[in-house]
Length: 61
Image 1: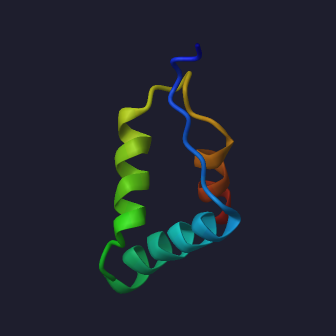
Image 2: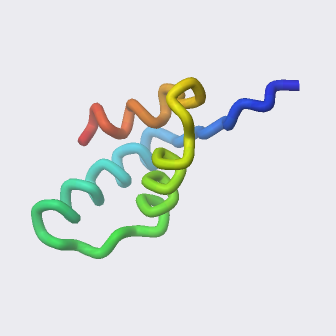
């Protein structure tokens, strides 16, 4: 069984998180729950477990 962290996001979720990150930096917007979860998972996930879903958000950002 694969014990790696499996993090998946739909294209819509990726776009919403990226947009929220932009709004946070540009307009001091509130952090959406989904963005908070993304940031938490990014911080707590080691480099060997980061997959495409993580990087797709940063590319959109």
